[in-house]
Image 1 (cartoon, rainbow, N blue to C red):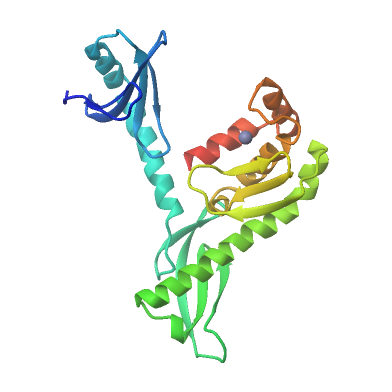
Image 2 (image 1 turned 30 degrees about the vertical axis):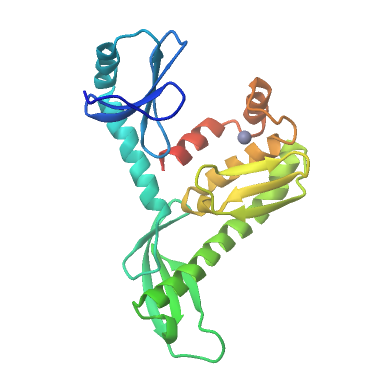
Length: 249
Ligand SMILES: [Zn+2]
């Protein structure tokens, strides 16, 4: 056990327990609660007076679960990182695609590239001016690939939205797309604008549909309360399964 270091002004300590770096929060709870956060850190909340070795025993008893949760987080982080380089694996709609670069002779205007998917490959036909492995070329291809990926989410959303709106019985005022680190979507209830994370392109398309349902349901119920979950059960009965799928990947 290492020395406790205060992590913030709240009653949180950062310490090593059972071989894991743990953020321990002491609060008025009856039981020990443990979870692995999206950044892979282990967070534990425990009753204020519970001895530290009891908490450590608890962490050790959950060691296998923690290790597997952390490896999912790691896998997910890798999936969100890609670069437009030969041989790189990029997940599109939940399926791995190997990036394949083809060089085209330079043509007039700004150098660009086009993308196509076939049999587990993502082929990028690039103007020779941006087809080398220099950092500038790589950056130019990354930028075009991220635009292409966003376009995939945009067009698939346009396809799904009318049916989802019909099921929920609500219309949104519009959808915008952003790359977000900590959420899959959001809904501004007053403007009725929905924002979706363009990283949804890496996951099974049923996950995108689940997030669309989730945000549309917020137009009827802003909080994640029992009424909200009942609405979700009605419009997308297997939403829990889809949510798990999204969080596992
Ligand atoms: Zn929500």
